[in-house]
Length: 530
Image: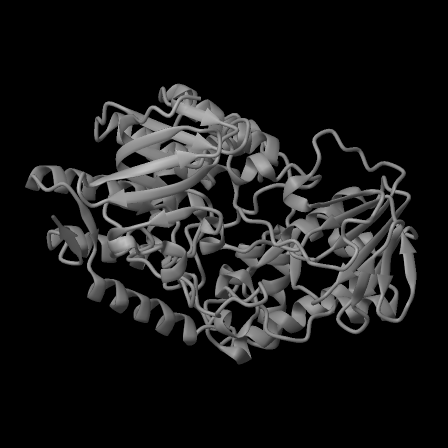
């Protein structure tokens, strides 16, 4: 690779929903002549390129886990899409809008420095590419930087050990002795998917989770036709709702209902399946009232006791805290513990001491042997995706330094002192179904660029005071919710050493859209155009 610097209009980092959407908008709507996409995977897919573990699937229904303007007849035939289908969906979309060939694969951006003289971003990759770009867009995903534990002896294990988001291609665990460390989304999905094919499965639990059934099922032609007949109404519901899942969220308090009515509602939605449905479709105050939240928590605990016959295991699996943080669902998770080859280890009371050549040693000295160890230990989320990139703005300010004690941005799309840097799903963006929120943010970023061009200005960035006020709003809203009381990546406190703060605007996509419309109508008073 030569040291020649290629001048382009924009560089977009990331090949998932966010990166493909923004590259499409910049190329086909803003009409920029040269836009380059950079993706560290060997193809498009983003999160869904990396999440190739057994059981990987979305927990948002197929017909709304996409962009609202992709209205061609769907290929999906199940309620939720598996990882492979999602990868195919993203690739096919990029091929249709003519942007697939604009991506460079197997490449990581290492640095992006803003040159105040030229008002351009100077960008370098690990493979020697050098770009000079007017606009720099980071669509690196909110769950992209694996949080790998630092157990002593981790490099001594002779078998295969890896993070769930780096599942080795082609690995078959049939007949193997497998350890799954972690019980979040990937840990619960993997457990439900592999328990019947492995020789032995040991689940290491740090904290019990509230996990509802997902109830994935086929969607026949009649149901699909009905969905498409009502598609406009469904999408209106998405954009007007809090969490953009395509169903009407309940406004009734759980405390207004009788115990019998609550039980009926919880049972019905439990059987329907879906973590977001159980949290938001049942009653409207599970996320804001501790007393209401406990009614749902108690119901889930009762279902665990009903499903898991061994009393000791059932007790360990029953959470004791608030229900929330990130509503989870999986297929066959609790049912897996009825299998004779599946066991549960409580590492809250008996932590992992170290990894050995043959497996795992616990604090009490007990040694367990495995062929495969899976770290389903989550991610350094949202701002964690930026950790390995040196992004430097005006006056030599580094983004990682600015975000050291809590990452902030204006609306999740722009950061003061970083002109023409646009984030997708940045800190302070909406907590909702991801593709619709990306669609909203992409449209807003497009408007900002077009407004800058119309004004004849070269750069646009968040106003410092406006960004501070937005962050205050984000944190204040979080503080009155259950989310702030539950340890999770939503609150940025799942990784040791990080400062707790809300990474999301929790007042809903509909309210977020209203705020952006207010900004647009006022000609962007919260931004600086220069």
